[in-house]
Length: 112
Image 1: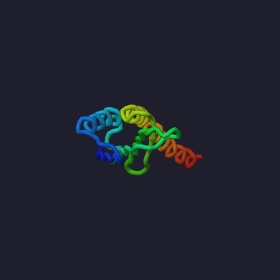
Image 2 (image 1 turned 30 degrees about the vertical axis):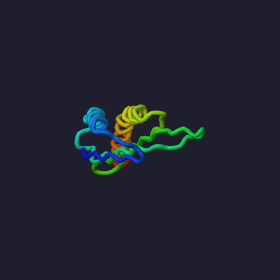
Image 3 (image 1 turned 90 degrees about the horizontal axis):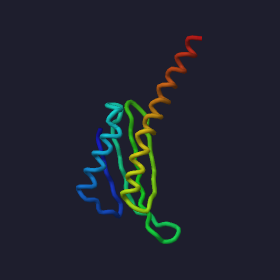
Image 4 (image 1 turned 90 degrees about the vertical axis):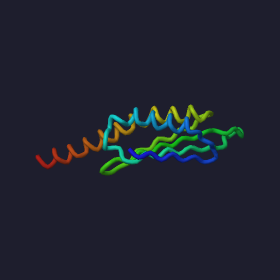
């Protein structure tokens, strides 16, 4: 898994970057080599009342094809990251299941 972390308007420390990498390894490690590149994008976004919300977008590129993306917006950066990382594992699992079922459906139709 190749990890790219981008931040727009936010100063990320080494500790936060290492934490994101460790948590992604834990969440996505069960998928093995199916996970290619992972991009984490962090940004500040103005809210409707003038407050600054933190956005986190995680995109997982799958091998041999496909991608899964999760977007979250929270009041704090750690909450946005945590919520996105909680959601990305199940989202990747659902996509891989869809891909497997799609292949099985084609094979079943060919047998009929």
